[in-house]
Length: 133
Image (tube, rainbow, N blue to C red; front, side):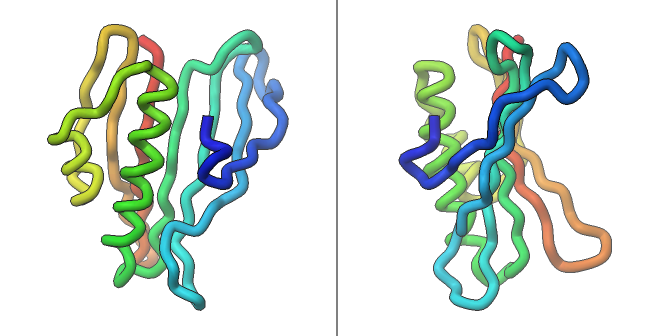
């Protein structure tokens, strides 16, 4: 789904039958030359199809979080549209760009945007997840 953004996933394989997974290479989410915030793409499901898609933004450099959240929102929007055939609403896009936590659902999917503060540093993870109902 996301090769246009530079993601390349490893092979889709079983790690705990019947669960399968694949993980992408991280891509840079900002233009800083020393400390890059990164986005990684995760796919989980069964042998036959993916049931959960996750984008995780790792914020290492908080001064560039605005730029990185804009990058994550653009990729999240594309992933959501490719996975569901629908578009995120204007409010959902605003929440992604601002880093505001939310959850919602469509006819066949649950989706959410969450944040995980790192206890030992100023870093944090933002996660956009799409899951089949």
